[in-house]
Image 1: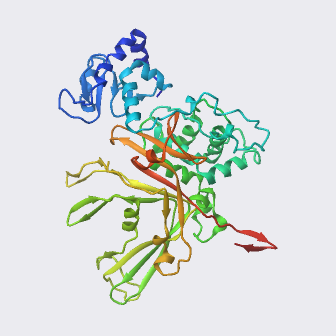
Image 2: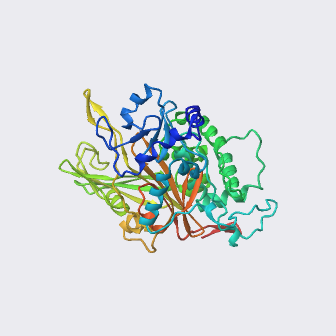
Length: 478
């Protein structure tokens, strides 16, 4: 949220109260005064007490609701159970000079200066004539067209990062921009497709002021009731809800029926091939399953010992490896009895845009009234390439039929920083060959090294070479 009554009341009383915590920010070590924890540390804005998230109720009992979260670098209101995202970062830095110093030290340490797009002397975005579709996007004035922050409406960073990634998806962007004048929508049209088209148009209008995506949020509340409210949600779950809403009823048609495809299927739709091989008779049973994204496990285990995979390539190798199935799992079609077998997944058909979900969140479970596994987040760094070769993971390659390489380029990364209970989503997007960090209402210039070193949660790749079909004299030519 942008502010709350508790923060405004404290600020109106005296800004000195909010700046008292600045003396603590010069320290590099933050430890809870009660339990000595170093995780989820907050500094109370009223009494300057250093406490972890679990220890904050002690301040609440004295009506000390406002604190500063070290992990999120934001003020937090425990009464509203939400972060206070100030509209202008400079306001926060004026209240907390030490935070500005830490920011400059970090920039100096990285040997790069993170610039907001509004830091340039000349206006980056020029309003364009919306009645003229012939503007030249290669001109300097339009190098930043499409870069616009999205205001946090109350714990909605999970939505903003996904919307930025979708709006900078070259296929979706071109699709919706080309349709903005071809179709007239009814005023009462609140479908996800309509709201996404409206959002893309707003981002590419040439405005610099952050946009409020409240209509999109409201629409998603109606489409996916489990996402309604201002609680923090999972960004991947939100993405899948959007793609599900974009899919028409005809998406239930057979995967090879290309005529039934909708925009979600056209852009993200691919097909997996599952081969189960009977070890007794050698028979192979093959099935096909459509997909819009691929969820990859980050852990592998051997003899009850778990290790975290180190790269996207390792995750894909694990995903497509041959695994053994017990005899009580598979019934062979030929033998008509349960047999030991092997199973392998490969990519039969690759989509134009590949979406990889790195499963960083492990949810706990209870067995026989005992907690067998606590919920946790995998914070390990997972390496990923700027250019991805999917050839080795295809069905044709596995069968020795692959002729051309299947190359993809990274264009967006959604990252999650912090813990499961208290975290923040941002996204990196590639725009006109330059990387940018979209952090709610603010857009920063970023470097390729910034992207490579981030804690990736969702990766978006676009195919380098596109194939298309055109009809000539009622014949299809590829």
